[in-house]
Image (cartoon, rainbow, N blue to C red; front, top):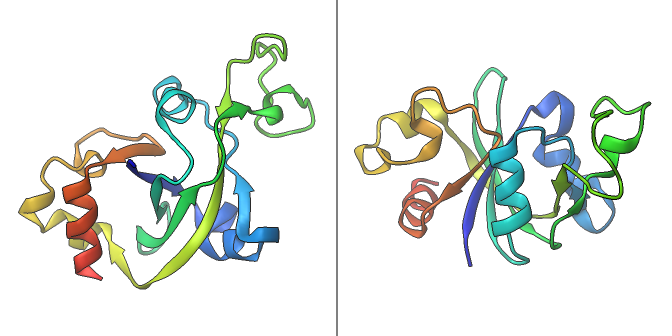
Length: 152
């Protein structure tokens, strides 16, 4: 099993939105970064655990846990000209973009803020804390996962 952190703006799609979906599951669409796409397409497996992170809000931070609920498959929003994630260069016969389904596991007892995470020397190698890292999906080591959960 692997561990991940996935960012979403709560005004667009937050942890409560995921919890409210049928079977508490939703596809994670709209990723338009090749590195993040490759992680979803090539590395994520069913059952992998995810920190659900709220970004671009008053208190950015980890707010919940989800899990990967499907193998990757083509991101159909790339083919829909009416969708905000439409990519006219993406071809259904040879898709460029992929997504996975994610399933709600639980909300954390409290938000573990980005500010707090930055104060923990044990998390110095956490991809989220690296300068210039703007990826919406990033790996988390088993040690980092356990340490962050212990902060809850």
